[in-house]
Length: 389
Ligand code: BEZ
Image (tube, rainbow, N blue to C red):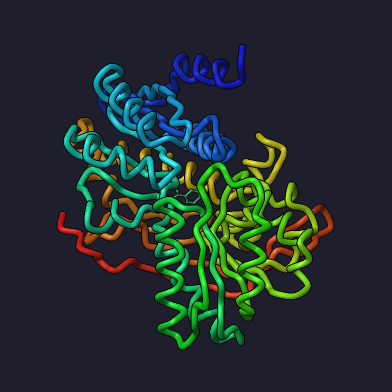
């Protein structure tokens, strides 16, 4: 039996019982994540974070039976859409949680909206889903692509970087992350002197792109890559000899704690912005890191905290007394709590999360690579971006 099949069986069979504070209810949750493809590890980590929240907080929801059904998007928009249809029409889920790729989120948005099924986005940063294509049924417990990248523009300019070359995969998230960074960096006074988008999921050799980037002579290179692509990119950047010549900056997914140790010394010195690092010194984060590490033998990443907070949001919505899809969607757009990442709330104007963004450097620690906090931009909120709820 493959790892994925074991997963799906375990998921289908899982029922979490919780003690009573009111009437008995059953909630069916569809976890729609990549369990294969370049973002498979991200999907697993989100799943693990979500299940940890249900384990820790399941006792707070009255007589609620939560059944979890899992489906694999394979990081492919058409597959994601057919799995979303299956979860909603055939499995009759009450709420959907997940989605890692902005491309998949773009593909399922209309179907989810028209079906009136609440969706808690646990990764995909697609700006449109909480902008021009926002929905009363879609709330985000992760980040938007603009939110994570805008703060890095002024931060880099103020820290002496005047010219930048950018690289990212050629799909919705790559374009949105770079467009938002570029606008903020140039507004601060910097100049993007060149950019390239690499074929998504198929680029194995970044050499030709690195040659062009170096030839442009920028003060720094800023990139978005995640998962398997991030590991290949960071390693090739160092083996190409660029680390000594041009500093590497990025969207923090580049050096996620999930795979930074697979990148190895090549990741040392990379500076990036993200909504969570496991080294945050707060009681909520310490408790989360301890519980996650106890269960999984490694520190959690941003993907784990997104799954965990999606679980926390669901518990909060159920606790508020929501028993149908309409009420769950309404309650999910009102949740706020202190997450391991800091205070979080849902912006009523967009249904996007409002949260801190942390600038951090990857440094060598006593037990492998770790994240050194350099700065915090508090309560970052997206512009409305054409959202009319
Ligand atoms: C996205 O497609 O939105 C995405 C994927 C991986 C990490 C961050 C964002």
